[in-house]
Image: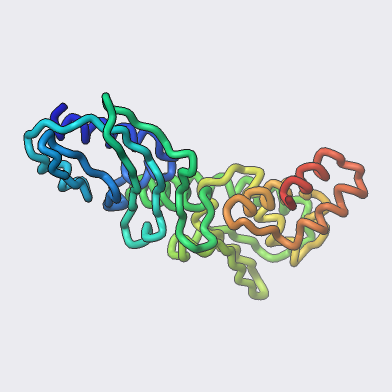
Length: 265
């Protein structure tokens, strides 16, 4: 088999076995890919190393021995610097083979950013200006409808406005409230642009509950949905979950109690 042909097979098999997050990084050209342990031997036993995709493009036109490759590990520790490192091992074989090692792992950066959070960061980074404007316009319309419904059952007398703050640090998910005598402005983190209506309703209820505690009693199920999503994004539980649990217990809402237990696990 020729070197380029075998290398193409290895690259295709690596890609097929990556998770969706790693595939997205490669598809969107957000990382340079570096290989460790990726090499072939010519029929004269000379090693040909492929350390990156540029090496692949400049492979010599030679015959190489068949090998069995194993995908050992994907290192994303340096993904914020635009680098993905893929580790392989191989040995001589009668014909080309590829498998994923039983100890295969994806090593993520040592930060609190979860898989779901990184997926949303990728979605955000894929948006061009036109797509972002459209998404924000749709988001504003959704939020306005949800807010109107919530305020009907609220004692809040001030004007309430909800916006998404596109300038927030993407890796630190936090919402902010500004308040004066006339209005309350809630600034939502851009990762919530990709959230469903129940979650957004839960966020608005949660944030406004500091001005009207009764909102938690009315929309506690939506707040549960927000807590569930917050756990997926931040791998933490909001303190309000205990209050919501007590509300669910008082109402003998066994389904909500079960969902809360799952979130708290």
